[in-house]
Length: 375
Image 1 (cartoon, rainbow, N blue to C red):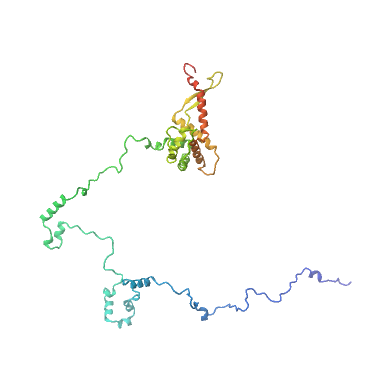
Image 2 (cartoon, rainbow, N blue to C red):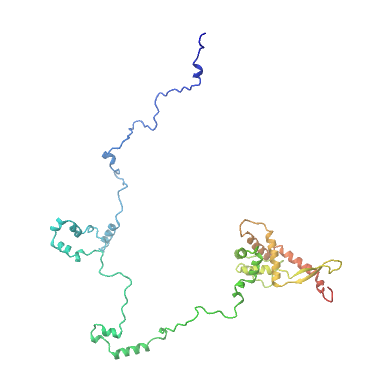
């Protein structure tokens, strides 16, 4: 039986034939330029570039040294106090000290200067014959004993009679202002006068309205946060434009002009609270009207009670305002805006005050309850 025929075409189909390029591809080659892969020491390669004719190279027209410029300026002005450019260099004495052969043939003057280092030839140029110390010893006072001890001509020393006459004359002509008064020992600052003013106590050093409002702003005992909010409120009132008074909602009698309020933020706050504060409150007496019906009885309020009720209404209205941002000072900003609205008559707190006063006017006949034996 003959062997099976094998054809190479089945395997040829799986092979990839890529034609060979006609010319080899050499990257980074430029026609006509010889590539040098070694270093040479040829002078033409190491020479510095030269500027073309009529142009200025990078190392040309360099600025002169400061000493050279100063020497030229002194020569132009004729002062002659500039630096000695030509005379600068190593001193001859230093050269002779190191060169023994040159020292043998040196002039006798230089040899003598080398033997005597304190001579004028060896003096340093920077050495000054005077002292530049700013602090100098003060001269000793010449007392009569010092006059006698000093080596002076006897005719220059004053006699005892002349000294006594000079002392009497100087004492009589001395002005009264030159006499230094005796130092008064005691306190550096005077003691306070008694009794102390009301705001001298640390617990009552602030304005009473500011102190009460700060306590009403406090939540969870955080007094520092309440004080920060109070500062933001006063700052907002201080920087706000002057309010516009409303004729329908008059403020307290004798209030200052509107332009004065931003200049006094504490007065601004006090005027807003006291103007909207109710005069009285309504107390409900259960069963007083008979049949278990409560009786509305008006009760007058004190100053702090009136301010407390007014500011609680202001806080309630401020909490219902829409926030225009975020941050720790947002609530204080809303309270300040509500205070401005109260002064301008735009706040809803005025309606609450009017409602309380209307109800109290209606129930004014109940003021006599409890008198005449009624319980």
